[in-house]
Image (tube, rainbow, N blue to C red; front, top):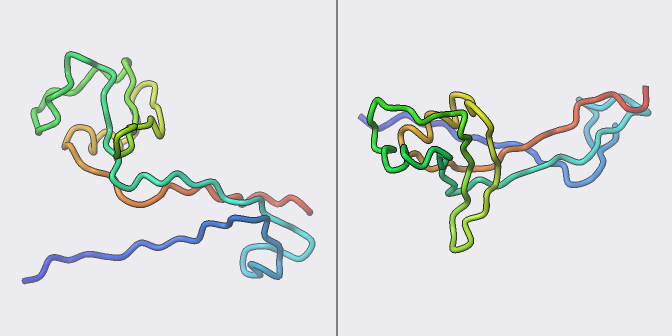
Amino acid sequence: MAAKYHMVRTVVWDDTRWHTDDPMNVVEGDWRDPSLEVNVEGARMVSGDEHWRGREAGTAVEPDWNKGSWLEGPGPTQPKLMEFGGYPGKLFADALLKGLVLRGSIVAEDQQRHGR
């Protein structure tokens, strides 16, 4: 039996959008600001708890979340793409605890009503 999967797709608006660009989501006379995007392709979570590091291989021990954590991008410069102070949320915590690599982008999209 083949493994199940699903594809994920989203739109990232690079410019301000108006009713003519997105009539289903923007009413006439209104607009939306451009989206913000962070590409996390290949990034890994890193714990700020130095004594815990290296335990990503599935032990039941969790790091001290109060010491923070961050999402570190791939490549030689390894930039901190995002930083978390405290528990980072289930998806990011699971990625850290299981040593998972993140894929895709995180998008923040404007849904405010500006013109009305």
